[in-house]
Length: 384
Image (cartoon, rainbow, N blue to C red):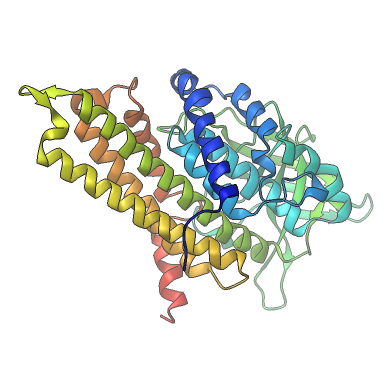
């Protein structure tokens, strides 16, 4: 098995790396401190075609694949995770459900703007009282046959890209009935921004990812056309499981980028910082820390490469995606902690990127499936 990148993949990696260093790095610190959304960066990412990477050209995409998206996410996260998660959520959670399950009319209506980066979409799954228990969804949608509309009531929590000035829609999982076995029938419905009864709460005050957009959403007799049903009625649970399996590979790539960024910054600092008459990088204690950080980033990268390869080959990849996400998020937290330690007191100052990395890393063990959920997935796939 050859994990070396093709010339085209290397070119993509290099172009995104250059963009991250020259465009994102100089300004993202200010956005992070002010908790502002970097619209100017998003516009440039759209012009680069990053939002359309894994989509077919017929829908306005770049004709690439999911691995290309992962490469871009890794390079962005080496500099900043807020920008990276904005892209990941916009593609994996925002546009992908419509691309995978939408009708021709829904694709024609929404995909051109989503794949160009002109608009963003959110994925309304998590609720305030459910968290990892997605099957415990309380949001309900009732079909009013007199008007042929879905009437939605409920709330969602921690929804990325749901309240920006360019957010076009949110796909919402809701209980639409009861299955023959008595279980909840879950379906997914498209709710355009600005729909009466759809309210976006003020943005959260977050520990990390402070330059990304995250909100709680409420639906109070929110009405949308019956044609806004995304995919088959009652298939919402299966649909979001497919979306999350893919998304875990993308989150793993993002986590690897953060971990590698910690290595980058630690090497730079260790060469510049003087202690006891010489650069601290000359001391074996620092060298060993950085060597271990590189080891972790490298092995985590191989894990998400493997998961992505299986996915693109049409092979089962659920377990490998969970392994990649679990391992990459764990080592991202490890590397962020060590990078902060290497920087000493300066690592606790927000002017240094590692302080941002440290604050951003923890959510990677929680979002898109907690580490505990990943372990359950792996164990069950092993037949336990």
